[in-house]
Every structure is written in structure tokens, then in C-alpha cells.
Image (cartoon, rainbow, N blue to C red):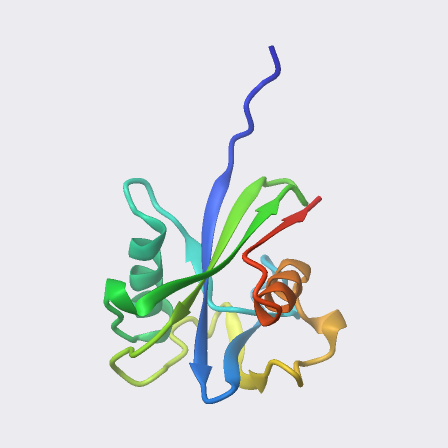
Length: 145
């Protein structure tokens, strides 16, 4: 009998300001170093994806979000790389607080970009780019091998 797939689960969140979304420029030498990514984190044991978004928003951006303001946008069934993952993407709306990069050791900068005018696609993490393209077309699901 074939072995069942074991997945890590991550959440990424889209913070919008008018027509722009927030991206981080990673510089930690570990995860997508030198690439633009959405703010993100891992789901911890016992958490729902929504719980993880709320926690990660506080840990990474110092903003408070309530569950009704976390809206599903997309999921990537991700078989690329060493870690098999389910990458969930959510819109975060009506947050409280001022956006602040609380992880400057991992992300050199954060900036807002128009979805129609993103940084050079060679500088956006491949899964992030796939998700953004699908979200722009209202496609809720994609796969990456």
C-alpha cells in the first residue's frame, strides 16, 4: 500500500491598501532569500488556518485581526521542494494597528505594489507568483510540482 503524503501547512496573507498588496523582501539566507513574498507563517499544532493568520499578523506586522476579517483567497497544493505543503492564502481586512516589520532579520523591507505592476517576476518567489496570478483571476486552487 502506498505511503500517505504528509504535509506542512502554511498561511500567507494579502494586506491591501487601495489597489496595492503588501510584499516582503526576504534577506534571511534561508527562505526565498532575495525574493519578494507575501507575509506568511506556519500553522502550529492545534491551530486552524484562520488562527495562524491572526497570530502571524501580530507576530510579523504588529496588527490585530479578528476571525471575520480573514477571508479565503486561494490554496496551492505544493509538491515542489523538500517539504510538501498546503499553502493557504487569505485576505486580511479591517485590521487594527499600524503596519510594522517586526522581523527585520528575515525581511529587509516591505512595500506595497499594484497587482498589475509587481516587481520583476524573477524576484518573486514562484509559489507566491503562482498564487497572485490565480488570485487576480479568481481561481481558488492551483498545484505546483
